[in-house]
Image: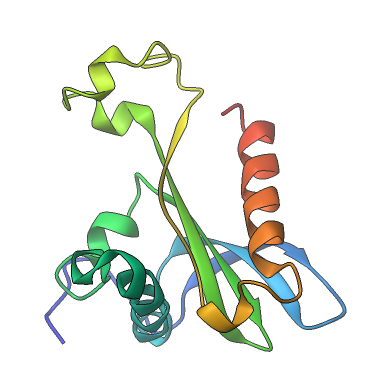
Length: 145
């Protein structure tokens, strides 16, 4: 594995946003840990299956998705990461030509959803993807996005 420049500990620093009695929970990732990185890479393979390998998360791009500017959430079922959604405030992209035309740029009220991935076997069962998305949206609204 490439040496990452993030200050990475073994365990992720997370905040549990929602949980159920059925071993399912949604976590806001504050700092990604070494123990979760390879699991995140595995989940990204299901997105790459649909859109191609350029969407694979790996040692070369993990910092782009898990850093101080992003708002990543992961879904865990029975302590296994089964999906993630990553939001980024539009202001992070202020120098991008497409973002300059966004009427909300500068208002600090809009998130761009970088990635929304659920493992294939969990997409149509249990409502996990729908729950992850709903919690992400509700959390974002409460934070003013």
